[in-house]
Amino acid sequence: MSAADPSMIAPRSITGAQPALIELNGVSKRFVKPLDVAARIGNVFGAAIAEEVVHAVDNVDLRIAEGEVVGLVGESGCGKSTLGRVAVGLLAPSGGQRLWRGEPVEQMRAISARRAQLKMQMIFQDPYASLNPRMRVIDIVGEAPVVHRLISAKQQVEYVGLMLNKVGLDPTLMRRYPHQFSGGQRARIGIARTLAVKPEFIVCDESVAALDVSIQAQVLNLFMDLKAALNLTYLFISHDLGVVQYIADRVVVMYLGRVVESAPAAKLFNQPNHPYTKALLAEIGRVEPKKRKFAPVVGEIPSPLHPPSGCHFHPRCPYAMPVCSETSPALIEVSTRQWSACHLNTVSNTAGR
Image 1 (cartoon, rainbow, N blue to C red):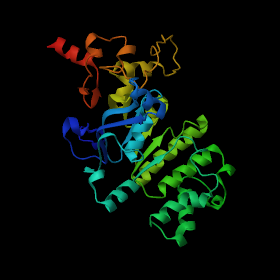
Image 2: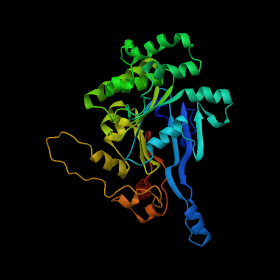
Image 3: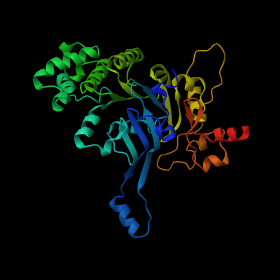
Image 4: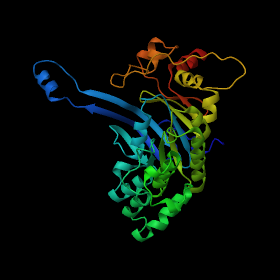
């Protein structure tokens, strides 16, 4: 791709480039557990019990260009799903700003905000849990477009049939309930439900993780066919790096609520920069004739209730320095279109001057 390709534009907070389709600026999300009655009474008597605060997403910048497929990866508990829910508006951010085509969603007029919100949809992980077992497919897929006046009630049958055709399902099955379908078919029903409101941006949250490997390949190919046919933009959340390598144009790596690296997929898989990214890639199974030393990431991911100071990864990093526990590293461009947040980059640049 050329340097002018919009899918490779860096975050606006770094470059000031043209508006993206969806943009998150300094977004944070905290979940606060209020004190119960016993704790409040204890505080009256000097117990000093504080509210529990989960720092799920911490000051994240993310820009996704129209037509781009961005893979979002990281260990379980790093904040991937929370960030996806914030991106589509299912969760309100605790801080920062969400923009749609360069305009802050929260500052839009009510009708414009509703239209923009409809263009942002999410496909969930479990096809067994995300479909209402009491509803027939015709209502699962066709209810939202009728409610939002995209079609009339009289057009519902024809429209649902069209949506099912797009995802490779027989329209004559629309009167059935979810339990009458296989896991792969349910996944396709979930995709059809999302497509029914004519979205432009879709967050796929581990959307193939619950499927058999052979079915995963079929659904991934369906995602790519739909992207080409409908000019869709994806944020593809997954813990499976092999899947992300196959589908993504660009990969964003998260660790404990922060973005630690972002790069075009080919560059990230061939030339990772951040120690955490390198550790993740080292754990991918490969068929190679020579022996390979296996070095997993040491220790467990810290609790988001009490994240480490400085760089969140420093307690597990083999290259940690004193500055790593004191200061959070900035996300800087270490090579063309590759951004990384690691103090080693600053030390290396300083040493080279």
